[in-house]
Image 1 (cartoon, helix red, strand yellow):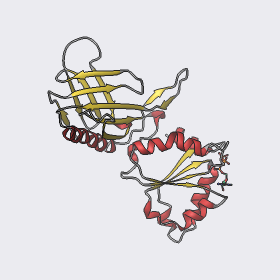
Image 2 (image 1 turned 180 degrees about the vertical axis):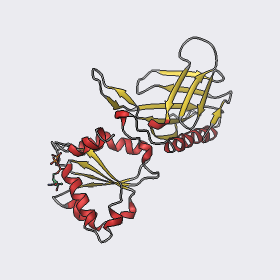
Image 3 (image 1 turned 120 degrees about the vertical axis):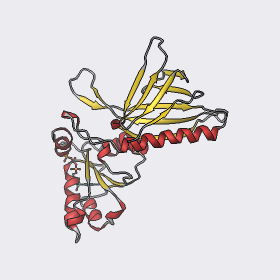
Amino acid sequence: MVTWRSERPTAELHLRVGTASAILTVAWPGWRRTLTESALTIQRISSSPGRTKVVFNLTDCVGCRAYRGSDSADVGAYFTAYFYPFKRRWMSAGVARQRVEQCFRVALVQDPRTNLLEAERWACAIRDASVQQAPRKDGEQGVTNSEVRRPCRVMILVNPLSGRGQALQLFTGHLQGMLTEAAIPYTLVITEHQNHARELVKKADLSQWDALVIMSGDGLLFEVINGLMERDDWQEAIQTPLGILPGGSGNALAASVHHYSQ
Ligand SMILES: Nc1ncnc2c1ncn2[C@@H]1O[C@H](COP(=O)(O)OP(=O)(O)OP(=O)(O)O)[C@@H](O)[C@H]1O
């Protein structure tokens, strides 16, 4: 069990909710942040009115990183955690994962290195705790990122012509940032012709990757599966975890896997 409390009286905490510009600045000792095995909780200790508790569910956390601020005069350090909780869509009954970035400032002492070390401890503990979350399969919400073993190195295959030719744009606009936040190393393959993925997967040293992710329509996944099955070591190769992200026009398989598989 990961239980870690920090109640150091000189710390200052800046809490930025979502990507909004509003920054809630609070000072110790009025607040306590607690990291348990399932949540990061920021709680106000004093009895004054207003928001008293914010809970961030680590099941929804894909990563966390620590860093110094861009201002060299700033002795504080920062850690930012990236969450993708399910939220109701506006004017819709459905839910979808939406990105929430939480940024914290640590300024325990005047020494920037000490502050950075403290920020790194928090980032590391949040990463470790989020990876250890048990898979959640509640109703329509699907499985969580924590089912993926870490560290996870992935090969991502994108068909630039699939669908309306937007798969590559979807990769750079959505996926690339998430991979960086989750600190997942990846090899990007942009397919150049029919059967490119099939030939590549047939001959590749698969030990370099923990998973293959296909960003395309059903056709490219079909190619990858065929490539795996054509290998001499197909029995082992076909055990490689496969992911499908909708980049095609129909995306029937991705829709089935992600929405109707419960
Ligand atoms: N660069 C490329 N040029 C031409 N064909 C390609 C290229 N990359 C992949 N292909 C081929 O395109 C075929 C169709 O791709 P895919 O299924 O990904 O897209 P789609 O047909 O647009 O999507 P959907 O299956 O959702 O309708 C695949 O069978 C694959 O062999």
